[in-house]
Length: 106
Figure 1 (cartoon, rainbow, N blue to C red):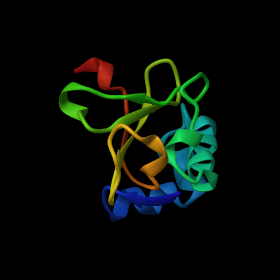
Figure 2 (figure 1 turned 30 degrees about the vertical axis):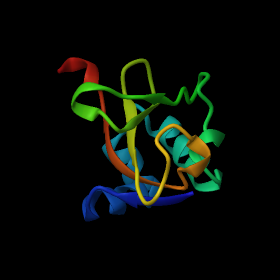
Figure 3 (figure 1 turned 90 degrees about the vertical axis):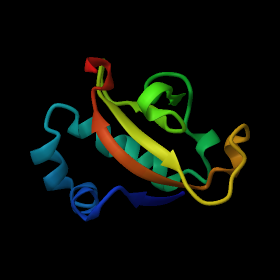
């Protein structure tokens, strides 16, 4: 799957395993696995909706995005980009990583 990033800083961190550990130490190993899963997947349907990744559609402030579990509370938040059908995950072949955060605190 094609992966883009919210900004240059996010790209720099996500493409360097040592920076991932420094910035996201509490979920670094899970984040590395999820990034690897995204890189090898052909489309979003290949990311399981069952734990541990537990891909799920978000609502509210993150409507239109998907969350992927990293820990009990932290999520990797991705947004589909390009041409795709919102109800057909096999058409989502490119995503933008928006954030790594605990959106439950809002």
